[in-house]
Image 1 (cartoon, rainbow, N blue to C red):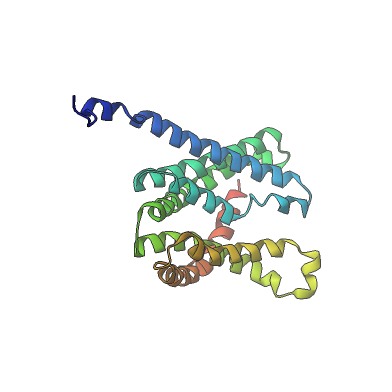
Image 2: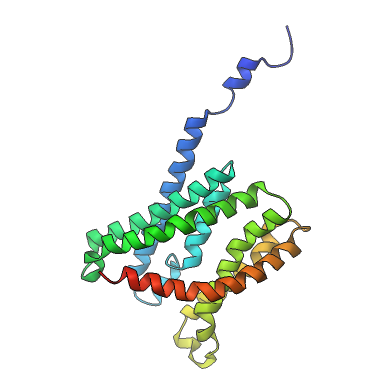
Length: 232
């Protein structure tokens, strides 16, 4: 009798593709729905208590898509998981607004969900794909994958936080400014934490380049999307 395992036993070991796919995409749906729920709960809290659940921050949504993509076995499924996660988050958030909201939040929930869902169609695959590249790539691709998320955090923190952080005398009345500071610091730390020693310099170089683009784009694009979502 041969001591090596037979081909049949190899095929029987490990889950089949379908259960893995169901589990992976189910995780994306549940994770996204949890994000949408957390964002809705944060909205219900008075400022600054809502800051204790920073689920409304753009960086948090992008980070969730990145993490979901990083949990995938391939780059395409990583992009798909990021997409499914953000779509589930948008659906959960605006479903809760439609059911429990009042005034324009309830009336415009379906319109706003459509607008932000369109944004998720773009951001989800990008961030999910970046997460998958981080997990499965090496060298420059892996460094750039991390830099996509890092630059988004740094750029968003600069755009939305810097105008508030420079008014030192007002910080005691504006604790939200520290959330953007934390976002920038996390973005700066990611290449060091997530990359190997030989990739970190590349990660920071890519982060600087992409952060400049993010800082120029994220403000106008976010304002435009919010205006469209609030007009119905």
